[in-house]
Image 1: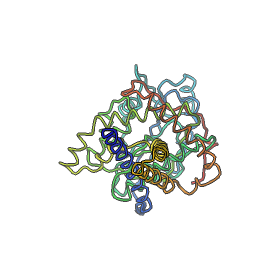
Image 2: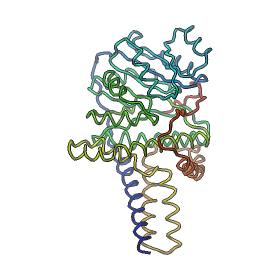
Image 3: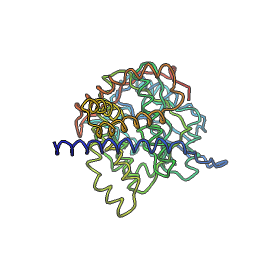
Image 4: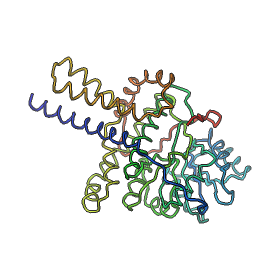
Length: 396
């Protein structure tokens, strides 16, 4: 019994730390303030890269929207990086004079596609914007990012919001992303730490990005390694809460499992790879951002934190162990309070209430994603997309 109790206390400590972490940053998000915009800043020249792997159904629509930015036409170029797109899609790009770089690899990765494009494009730029094949920028996105560069930032994460709210899973996925924006972006920047990256709706100093990406060739999510190497170079990541990019959310459980399985695999891979280095960096160089990033990878995923703490609260109540019961009740209550704080007010509606009934199913799917997880996966597995710009949710 003594050994079992010790294990139980360790589990409580792990869950307790995870919920305390997200609670702290959910609260600190209320102190977030956007950086002031300088008047008449220099207009930077932007390269917009959109990697597309078998994304024929949506990439033309994305390209059409990307070239419509309210920004001087001679100061931004859009390039589609076409990996395994159909010949008719490529032909249409050429007919419409949309820049397209065809790439092909024995084993495709997003990092390889981007690096190939960066080596192919000979023109010089001040900054680069990375979008996913389903992303739609608001018209003022480049102007807002340009103001951030004028303030001296070299790595910027925009505010990615749900394009579609057409299913209960999509609603939950959209809310989950907004919770991430609250905790890992607004909350962190509010107290002087770096924002987390998402993988798209990102902008970087062109030469910084090109230098860092040249050293990245991974089958895991490249944005996590990019983030780590930005911190190793002692740069910070700014968050633009008012610069919107619309992103398609997952609409069914099968896509959810594949996506989350890939994310969990990547987080464990990078935590295992960089944990001890992050500790050395913290002690020797005071690199808080890097150490904090690795801590994030080690947290219990929120839906599992909520689900398991609820289960353990009920179980400990019936076992009649007051110490464990009140510990788990505290964790469970703190988790619920954190989510209430972190969810934006616009999501407090009937659709969200209905979608919440799917949380137990989402919890089971998250467990399945963990079981199906494969460390060091060797194949690009993009999230399937189908939503057009017509279904964009404009409510911010």
